[in-house]
Length: 105
Image (tube, rainbow, N blue to C red; front, side):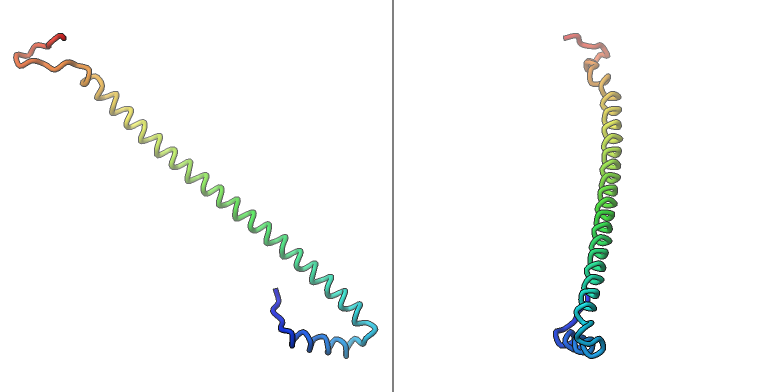
């Protein structure tokens, strides 16, 4: 979260020791640690909620794409079925002979 080097942390500790004194420094450090933990917990909660929301949106988008693909496949299947039904009567008719009569098998 925060990027402090060891030297920077030592400077902050020395300033805190001088400003607060050795009696109040442990209490202030515990208080600061408490707030840092609370901030981290809040950050993790927000991050987790955001990740869940993104996953939910991705799932919904995937579902919409799948539904559209199914609709497209259904339309193609209906077109193919209509074409087969239109061609079926002609395929079942026996071929005509050269003199215009039908042959019966």
